[in-house]
Length: 385
Image 1 (cartoon, rainbow, N blue to C red):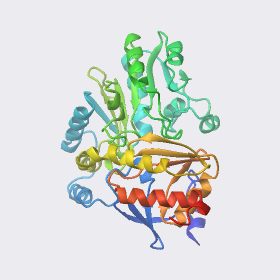
Image 2: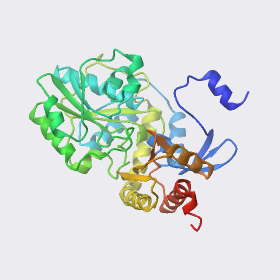
Image 3: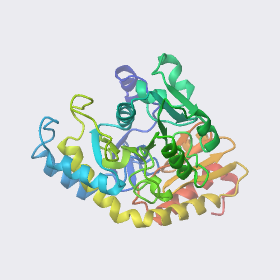
Image 4: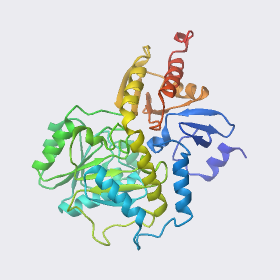
């Protein structure tokens, strides 16, 4: 039985797949035939510091030889050290650890309701916060939700980027506003400059918690460790996952002083286990070393994408190494052509190519990526490249 048939027979069909990847080194991955690809998907922003990073591999192996998971019934030095590190990086106070982004959002919703005693949550149109029932209620796209109704009540959605729309929906029962600083799953949608600062001000004026979902934008992705730091704001709650442990399952909720759980309010058997926390500490250490170059490399990549001269190109957008190229047509075909030529790109929402490479990607690798994209988008116009 071939690979595709086995996958179809034994796995639930939740993702569309194409290439079978066996291993990776740095910014590159290799399939089961040995073919090499430059990886611009980055494990959907989970691979911050490169595939098979030797320093991370060593840290994971050392910890695995000592203890993988003692559970949260016991104190854990790696967990405490990671909580201290994230609190310092975010300017917030306390952490709760879980296993994924969607779990982090679930915990943030519970935390907001507990702290305020209110039930209404305002989220953004086109926002994405996960697929469990609570996080799915915060997610916008109706196609993800229709099969699973009724969802959690008390959620309202407003236009992302419109402070007037948000203000019109805040009332005395509003516990929190949840939003992404950049809407990743929607296609790397950027807010107007100063918007997050206005949201912060409005929330404070109305005694409403501001929950910033940094699951895709965090961990150095946009040039600062957290994207909200570009606007110098102080959220009440921040959710983070994806790139926090370079691919190992870990999520976190970070809250300001006074916003806390009591024993029994929430929990996680695997959340904050010693292995993932050790991996995260090493990942963050390595992110901090490359972070000063992320903004520069992002601008270089952005400029190179803008240089693609084709009527098929609609827009380039993004920040740092979280970028998107929107085409007028044919993005799926372009992604397939890129794969044939050794470049993996993520096609979302029909005609958007999203790029979430490892933060270690070099300018030489960016040049290869853009040249491959050019040829895939307009093969007839690139014969002399």
